View 1 (tube, rainbow over the protein chains, first blue to last red):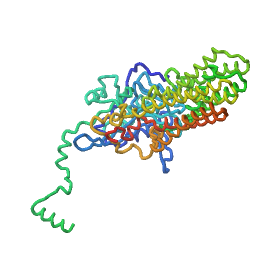
View 2: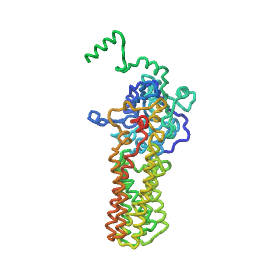
View 3: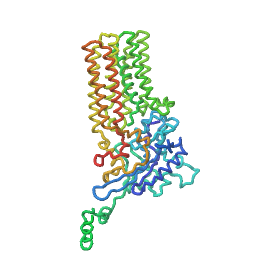
View 4: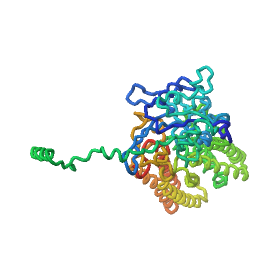
Length: 249
Length: 313
């Protein structure tokens, strides 16, 4: 059923801390590794050793240069994956009933046996969270590692999404946003966690924590910033040397 | 958006086919069996070819039958259901007309309304997408209607002239008016499209990443070293020079040339070949127009891959 549930018991999702992420892509790689051998069809790579390789990934890490009005630019790494939206437009547009949002925990999934590969759900998603697999021709997306988080056959500490388990910087957290006392809810409240593209009215479950403001970066760096060569006018011995060198120059 | 030939043919051809079903259902035709057979076959040809073409867009067409199941929420499913139902109801109406010599005005009217609803469902597949700012407007269904009616009226005029129907001239005038109205709507659509940019809709790179609150945001390093599905499908970019040339071509073939040919057909005689030529040129112009509809459309995911804020661009 591609109508959305009015209410889900849990709202499972991720918190991604942009202050901590170092852009190592380990989450993306571990996601690819786990999900290529788990739920549904493998995440294919096409022409992996050719001139024009491409492949399906459920998690991609962008890097942005952010330049404040004053002070130096910052480099911010930005993992992008499915946000398991409450009002998921990818689900309602699906004509075959392959896409659905689970009532029990809010996870958005694709029943790959029903998917006809029309790609409309990928068009409906503003976040680029869905990719049509080049080899199998069905839509692939983040499952929130539904085959890990409820899996009694793996140690308890592993029962979180693969990206969260892998992140060496602890920039990714998994939890229930319906519970205001959960770690992720508290983190979002304390750090001002935000939605991506709220104007799309998708009500994303996943939240992003903003980079903390730089307290002294602008002024502290300015002291050490190298002045441009032509503005240097040394005096004394250095001044004499400078003039002597200018003759040769 | 990637301008796939399958969806370009789907939207243009099915619009003309269902438009013609509307006109035939409302008895715009003439009681001449040769005309009736040709017009009915033409309506099924255009609607059918459009629908068949849409299945070429599917990676797993063997599962296309499932697309009739989710009409409660999905415009694409509604489109599938409505088009098949319309083909059926118009078929019943046509059996009466072609074999039994019975015109059932009620059945015709129902088929006409259903065909119009089908055109709406086709346009809503695109107009519903908030992710594509220039599609997500009431102008989109209006433009689809405008062109479906203009194209089918022109085709009907050509058929009526071919079979020497007495009211062919009247339909020619309707077709000319419909073409002018359709392009006036498209002009409104284009004017709207110019302002419907990602940043104007609040989906620019700064908003998409939420990093705009710190400063201007510029993509520094992409997540992958070669283009992926998202980029090929959603971030298709066309050279501005070529887009402008194509827009001129669409306007000339889709509007100017047919209007001149209709005027010639009305006042200079030899109506049938002129109108058939006018229809074929209009069709070519519509394919160019639909190519631009897809190729020029920006998708929100583009904001993650390139700077879409005017400040940072």
